[in-house]
Image 1 (cartoon, one colour):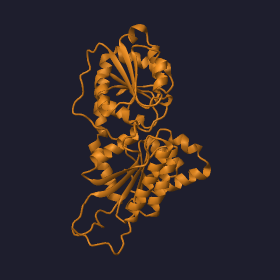
Image 2 (tube, one colour):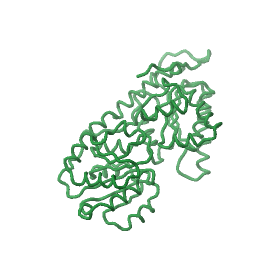
Image 3 (cartoon, rainbow, N blue to C red):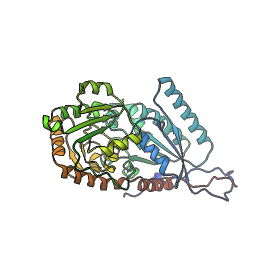
Image 4 (cartoon, rainbow, N blue to C red):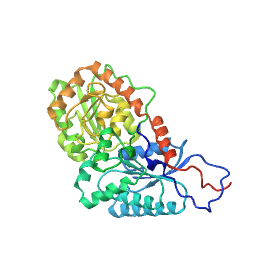
Length: 384
């Protein structure tokens, strides 16, 4: 790991009038800003895991900055987040502010919040998500791009999801190399995985925001291009929010294709357990939580070498990689995994083992270490 940036060691000013401490809570106080925990998607999944698993190390408070609703209700929620942040910053309590951001409106909103934190001289972590942030960043007017860059450059730490994204933020956002750390998304890894041999049907499952950029349409094209005898032995299940009705129309009543709406965690786990292959032939990605969850469930995958995927997945080891948009190669990958049970089983086992590298318990310890390094602990607790 690179030497820690000087900004990691920046202390928080403590007023001379602060009461003397006699009993300390050694956990770091953390204010996490991101989507409501009811919002569907990978950013929410990460934020929820932080809330669930960081409690031994940090006192986490999650403040939602957006939810799924009308423009008016979204504006109200963001205004409430601004007010909550202002009140906490005014309290002078030593607090690490951990801001999750992705692309488009999320970036603009979060840079505004980040500037509040910087003005208050509190420790700041910017946590970058979103597979299309690079194209969004390049499309910004020059003055706005400079503003986004300057805000991130003042953060104590910028967390990115992969080595590819680290290179982007250093090169195009002009961040110091020592300021950017790679912290891949976490995943819960179960103690055991299902036995999937000797099943009569091979089920492919696709969990994502159903859209072109996730390869959802490509999957239906490739599946319907399978030879009849193989398609009769296979099934394709797509589940998620997004262009659900459009994909159902595209399936055109095919009994071996099922398009479902968004499913909850329990239904997701059930679907992964009863499936044989995970498929996510995306065009852009950060580091998809759905892929990590499928690997932790012991599923081989068909995916694409985009975003942070090459950091956690090797072609021919945990499954097969295909270039995004190549329907022919996607179909060929499906054929291989339908016809080769040994390949499915061995790749699934290797995927399960590799998922252990992303176990949420190790993630919690590493993130808590960053919290400890950039925030004073307990200096401003009142006497009890």
